[in-house]
Image 1 (cartoon, rainbow, N blue to C red):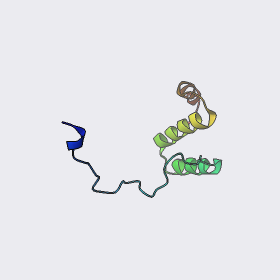
Image 2 (tube, rainbow, N blue to C red; image 1 turned 90 degrees about the horizontal axis):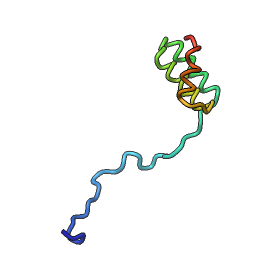
Image 3 (cartoon, rainbow, N blue to C red; image 1 turned 90 degrees about the vertical axis):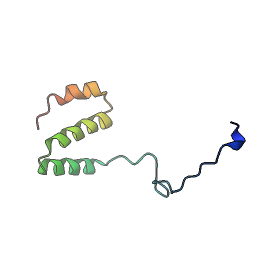
Length: 77
């Protein structure tokens, strides 16, 4: 089958991100990080707090995940 005989595929609906800002977002400010931690502590959501602390350690300190795991072993919630 040659390329000329193939049907042209056109989307029937608009893309979900049409008109939205895509790409890298601005980093969180320290006050935003603190407010997220406070809300997670107030909700007694230990699992999400631990995941958030791990992500912020990896992101802001620029350490590898293995190093972050060894750092988090001393953290008590």
